[in-house]
Length: 537
Image (tube, rainbow, N blue to C red):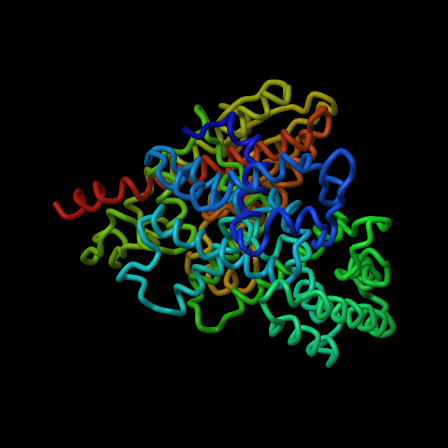
């Protein structure tokens, strides 16, 4: 059975497994004969972009042994017990993300594009099985299903599931990512449009790509120089670096000389990925055919502090989400019907019907107030736990008598261990789908959290100025789909600056706060049938 110990060592197996997915097209002879750009054969063995793969005998043995192993690996992951859903999702994403780049970077564009498409299609199939079917009778709207699949392909921090294979691989996505980025920042230049057209209509036969790839590389270099002359003065430096990239000899995909260094540049890869993902996200939320509720949901699930629970799903206790919670959360994230929920008659509390997607229960109906409060308390406890872990002094939850002259009580009071600054924190979970936020939340990311922060500051302003003028008040505002307010993000960053492993600690606290939030959302869904039964009796 796959477990925690298997995750770190899976990369090499998946690399070779995916490399042999098309055994007839990519075989040992092509690798050894150096017909793939980026491959180097030395006395010690074969390397790809200076990454050792092993000696010739090892490569031949592995290519024979791992023929069609990629599909077998998919089947093995899919057959894990239902309670291992978190592990399954992590492994499927492992198959699709950047750990496979070392093999795929060396492939010709057309061959790599075909390989990535095949991986995406197989991943979609297994996601259908994993989450009870994305194409249910209640979601027969083609436009909605297209939106769901586009959201799945986005990274977790952009509101998706992290299966963004084609936009994360070099040079499979380099041509389209590069031209798309420049068009977004420089306008629709005719030569860029023509370049993109040639890439999209190029033949898929790997054996017929060498001459066309070299010709394409020359066109890219010429286009880059033309774009460089026309860039606006305010163009961001990272875009200027991308424009200058093809002028370097190692940037040309047709150049496979061993004497030249590989153009595997981490910052360029990151910039291209960010630009393409941002463009895909904007295309998704600007689609006029999706409802304003879906648009607000996708915006709320992307951005600061969101998606961390999904990107860093724990596969062991005590931080593990149950399979039921994980399935409910992902269907809620994608706006899909929740298993077990049903459409009800008009509710006596909110005077509206409850649908199968749970929106009314999760965000509007007062019958969920008790579950909302439980979610709020769990998040407060988690924040206080991390402040204690970071050596904050005198951490108190709901302190009595903090304000002498006002009937207010913050959720947490704590003192920083280095600066001795005392903070008063108040946690609030706000829904972007509420009527007072919806119209702005569909067009402004983080609007609900920003308004909630301002309201909390105004609510506590007089009490802080009169009774606690030396203390600082910080609102911890979190939207129901995961986006965290800017003031909360800044507070968490400042609070762990004194730690040695501050980046890991910051990532962990974001992940666990998000986990508490989504566990509370799953609790609302799982408790809804009982609430409906009580409401109708």
